[in-house]
Image (cartoon, rainbow over all chains, first blue to last red; front, side):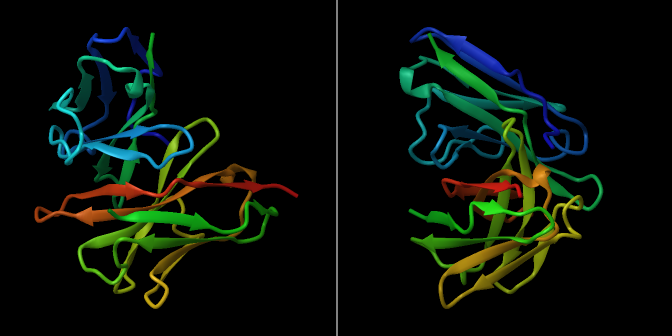
Length: 111
Length: 123
């Protein structure tokens, strides 16, 4: 199942900065771009970050992404109540014949 | 804005075939550059990529599911479908249809997802 490792939870108070890590390997994060998705249960997951650190149109600049080696991270600054959701990282994995792999998911709670 | 909606039986018996359809609006399954994708999420929240089909009919599947998966495109209805054979309880999951794309550098990603539909495998 999930090949990329994320912390199960993260939390912060409104206005704080929260960072979510995503750890992979040379065959996925180490050699491909990282993507981040935001998921509110019962809704369609939403693309939040593409190619490591690019935001799709409409995504606030409070969200930022980075990648170094075989790890990536998503930062949410100025945390807001509507940011409470599940966040998943993803990347292409070149092992075997290739497949798209996801992170284990991080539940962000706004205290 | 592309929207995708999954439909199909919510309960499937063990050893039978799971069949789901995804209806696309705000876009065309006929358009080049998009790869019509299936993803599932297990009850424990883990996500698994199932694979994709291109409008031409070419496919690419997760090696772990390849022997049981078939996908198809219906251009007249602007839909694409998933068949998963010989299901067991471990195939119980929320199934999402999604739009994939491969950029100019050859990197695949998924941009739009449906809301998902829970399929339970049980007798």
